[in-house]
Amino acid sequence: MSSATQAAPVITGLGVTAPTGLTVDEHWAAVLAGKPAIGRITRFDPSSYPVQLAGEVADFDTKAQVPSRLVTQTDRWTHLGLAAAAEALADAKVVPAELPEFEMAVVTAASSGGTEFGQHEMENLYKNDPTWVGAYQSIAWFYAATTGQVSIRHGMRGPCGVLCCEQAGGLDAIGQSRRLLRGTSRLVVTGGTDASLCPYGLTAQLSTGHLSTVSDPGRAYLPFDAAASGYVPGEGGAMLILERAADAEARGAGGGYAQVLGYAAGFDPAPGSERPPALRRTLEAALADAGVTPAGVDVVFADASGVPEQDAAEAAAIRAVFGPGGVPVTAPKTLTGRLYGGGAALDVATAALALRDQVIPHTVGPDAPVAGYGLDLVLGEPRAAALRTVLVLARGHGGFNAALVLGRSAS
Image (spheres, rainbow, N blue to C red):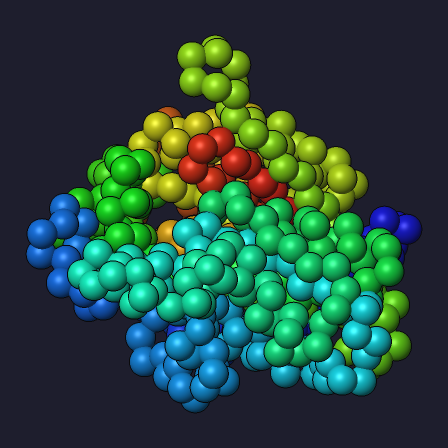
């Protein structure tokens, strides 16, 4: 084992609040069964919108999951994050009160912030007057609200932060967490959630022009397929516990689910510059950071936007590095839709479970990848495989790119 691998931080706990389930076990069972969680929006009447489908987190009992005083002080996005963080800490068997408070950190990803909370406060303003706007509007919408509430709830007073890089943010948050673990932090709660399924939130998402308007839930989100028409939005995400390997071992947590071997981020050049997209060089930089060759990667969890030109660019990057059909590719996010700030974190959680159980989850929806893409897209059913190393890719609207390399747990 290389010194780089020995020093790699480990993922010791997972927490999920997603359309596919309210726990890690529920989510993983749905992924392996290929059980879609995309349907008509129920959180409001979407009849007047061109997009009427989404991946919603169903049956989430806010009052049971969130301290009562926070229910009215924070947004649903933070509620989902608090629940996932609590599950991740319990999964890792971490009791925060037993650890030094300044050595525990929190770094999350955020995309829309507290959209629904903000919408309701604006409604109060315009339907009534400024006295109807609550004091918590100033913090509930803020991108760092989930980071702050997790740190307060669990007494974590180490370095805290938030990365606002849309879909790529979940990987960037883990990358920043790794940096903190190289300093004085021994444990970081990281990941992300999103909850922007409200009229204001959907209107903002429509501005990209990338959402699918197909009305059939089974045909709306088809990344890499000839019928790809964009993506379906979703809510939820995942939180993870990242620790220094030695500290995890010392407290009896072993090697956890997976090791974080490498990470890189990039940014696409301005449109019209004629320079290539950043994904390939970001991917290659992450492999170099991990000390892993393309031949050492066993599966790629693709960003899989479903936007034809973006699918073509991602396929080109994968093909250039691994060769045509040179590595299995999967995109379990077709079950949930794209979760923005929560999407890449959920992909990492799913990839960690794939490493644990030595199986590649399949991609539900597409019939086959476009022939010219040269992808070995895993379809139909999960594929048993000897997995040692997994590559997770993510891109965010506006040019963000990120890549993360996970290795199988040493334990």
